[in-house]
Image (cartoon, rainbow, N blue to C red; front, side, top):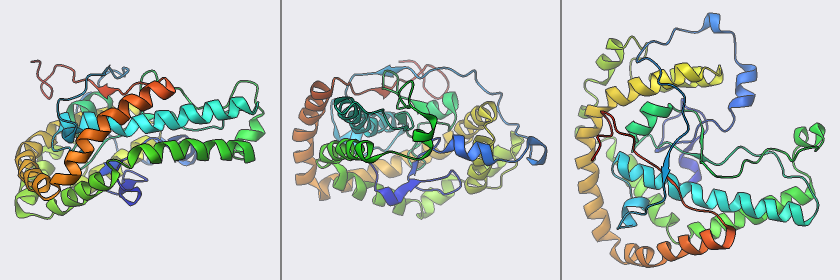
Length: 308
C-alpha cells in the first residue's frame, strides 16, 4: 500500500496512486448541472462490465510489490485490496459479536496507479471505483436506522473498525516500507528528461480525440468533473482515450522503470529477500484466517492486452 501522503483524494491531484470513487456519492450530490460542463468526446465508451479476476500469483512476489508495468500493476492492485478485504471481514465479525450494525463503508475496490498505469484495465473500466468481485460490501445492515449511518459510526463500530485497520496494518508490515521507498523512486523518475520526453505526443493525441485537455493534469481535471457529475459513460470514454494516448508513453517509460528497479533491487537486496520469504506465507495465512482470497484483475484480450 503506498504511503498515505501519496494517495490521491481527488483526480485532479496527481501522485503515484489514483484512489478514485470512494467519496463520489457525496461529490455527485454537490455537482452542478450538465449544461455548464464541456462535452467529452474521445473514444466511444466501452459497455460497463464487471472486472474479471485471476487468483494466480506471479513466480516472483517482487513484481507485485515493486511494479514497473501495467501487468505488474494488476498484481499490486490485488495485493493492496487483500488487507482491506481482511479489515472488512474483521469489522463484520466484530460488530456481529456485539449485535451491532455494520458501519457504512465504501466497497473494497481496485485502485489505479497513475505512475504505473494498467492501461488495459483503464481502457475497459475507466477511473471510477471497481469493486473486487467476491469482496463483501460494507453498506449498513438491513433494517439499521438511516440516522445511524448519517451520524457516523458509534463507539462499538469505531472499536470494530479499529480492529480491522490493525489487522490490515500488521499484514502490510512485511512490505510497506520497501514499497513506499519504491514509489518515491518512481516519483523521482518523472522529472527525468527521458520520462518528460515520453509525453511529447500525449497532448496532440488528446486533441485528435477531441478531448479538451492540454496535458495530463488538465485531463484528470476533466475526469474529476465526469466522476463528480456521475457520468460513468463519459468516464469510461475518457479511460479508453487515456489508454490509447498513454500507450506510446508507457512504451518509453517501462524500460526506464526496469533499469531503476534493477538498481533498487541491488540496493535493497536483504529487505527484498526477506519480503520474498515472508509475504507469500503471510498472504496464505490471511486468506485462511478470514476466508478471503487474493484477486488480481485479469487481462482481457485486446490492443492493450494482446492474447498470449
